[in-house]
Image (tube, rainbow, N blue to C red; front, top):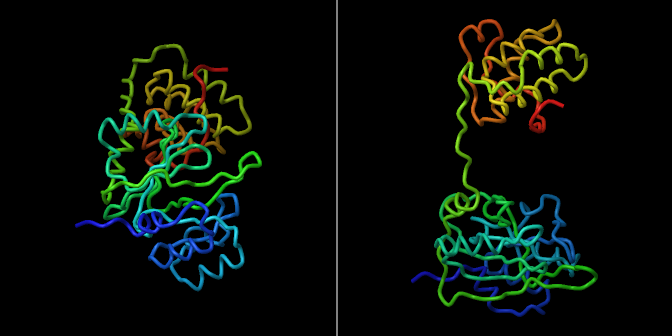
Length: 308
């Protein structure tokens, strides 16, 4: 028969008023790695953060002798044997998305529910086999704490508006938990955008003239690569076919602003908007060089629609 995780077993055995040094030692003694975080906060006090987490009783006792009020941090994922769904209430009500996921049957199998000091909820599950990296679904107000992540655990506390608030155990499942399909949950909360189809040559909406933008770019003498990236994003947003945009922008090549650089930057702009690399014609490649190295273009903010 499956057993509870070591973390949940320890969690069930103490109250919120348990001394932090004692509790940290209990976790380590049970094989759950821990590390100290700022008293009343969440920032690690060790040089390498959660990478320094350990089950060494000597090291844990040494840390909490030095920082007796330190909160208890625990790496999530394979290191501790548990993963956490973190429901947030900062700027967005993550409970709405969590209820939808629960109705879809995607968050069953939890072992423990912990209330965070700010009103959020941490839902603990046994870690699945293999890697489950941490991720965020910011618009849904839910984070997943898996491999390469960490969580602050009870009986840690925060100071909020001058008041002490605890991480409180809210509920324990009467039965051992089961692994969460974090990938399915992420897809449900943050579905991938369907790929946008590149418009065909000659199908431009006509609201933005690539030659007009090219003439403007040709008159510029500073930050031309960045401005070219901006212009390329504008043309992509307006539905101007990639090859029309490239042909126009290649007319402004100069000794210090070559065709290869222009081709790569235009491709980067179209990739930013459409999510895929445009396919060059053989003639484009011959005159401007290969454009599949899309990382060579500048990184910039996708522009708002229209030319300012």
